[in-house]
Image (cartoon, rainbow, N blue to C red; front, top):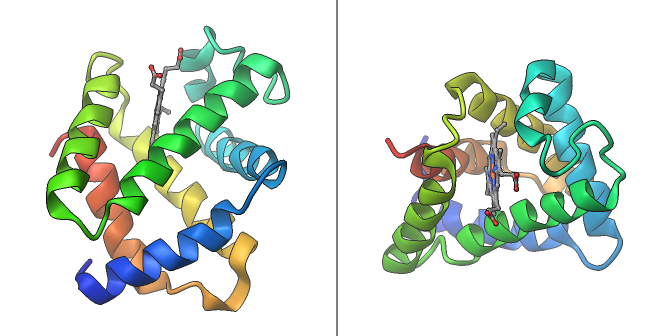
Length: 143
Ligand code: HEM
């Protein structure tokens, strides 16, 4: 199970469908965070600054859109190694001093692996996402 050229193309194409447009992105982002906090309720404490207690607050919705924007940047660049590395190292820099525990990253992956197929239906290529999501998450974690 690898994140090769074909898998990257599929992830990129399927992401553009899942990410969608306009107001859909707000609900999509909130669903991802709700899925994460359901698995790891303590993770909410990391989001005091952006009002993690209220997913529908302006501050948290704006945060959620920054994260989706970051994910969109990585996935848009996933078929270009140089750019993908650069984007991932930037996201790594954003997170390294926050000391996000490994199980929180795993919870994020689990949530994305539920919410993305829910948004796109049968076209979801589970194996491609599984492999490429590891590349993305490991890049942000920095290993
Ligand atoms: C902030 C992306 C996973 C915790 C951010 C920002 C982006 C981002 C773009 C905004 C950076 C800034 O403007 O300063 C991502 C992506 C992830 C991911 C693409 C994985 C797909 C996680 C996980 C956690 C986390 C799993 C912990 C549960 C945080 C925190 C902030 C942050 C605490 C700062 C919030 C604030 O502004 O106070 N992330 N992130 N991130 N992220 Fe992540």
